[in-house]
Image 1: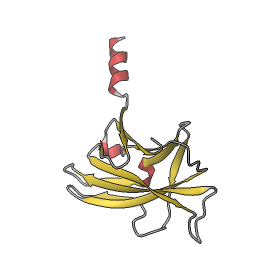
Image 2: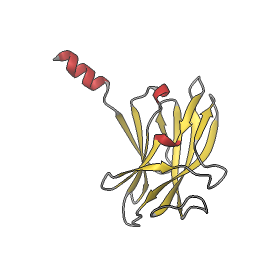
Image 3: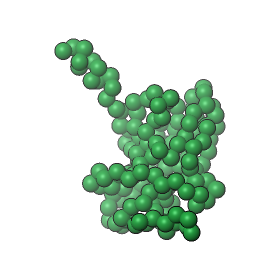
Length: 145
C-alpha cells in the first residue's frame, strides 16, 4: 500500500495557476501568455466558429535546447471543455515547432477555434514536452478571471 501511495503522489501533476501577463514556469521554460483578440483566419484556413488568439513569450532558463510546440497549449472554457491549438501561418510569429536554446527568449502566437462567449472565463493550459520531464502544468486565466 505504501508503494502505491508513493507512486500515486510521485506522478500527480502540479498545477500552477496564474493570471494573464504573469510568468509561469513549466519545466525549464518561463511562459508569459496574454489574449490578443479574435480573428477569422485567412484564405487557406477558416475557423468553424472564431479564432481566439494568444501571445506567448517563452524563455528557456535550462541548460539544454528544448522544443516549444503548439501541441503543448490548449484552451479551457469555464466548463472545462478543452480546445487544441490550430496551426497556420497567420503571421510571422505563428507557433508550430521551435527549438529554444538555453537563455533564449522568443515570442510566438497561436489560436484556438472556439464558440466564443464574451462573458465566459477562458484559461490557457501549458503542458511540458516529454523531454522536459516535468510534472508542472501551467494554467493561465486570460479572460474574465
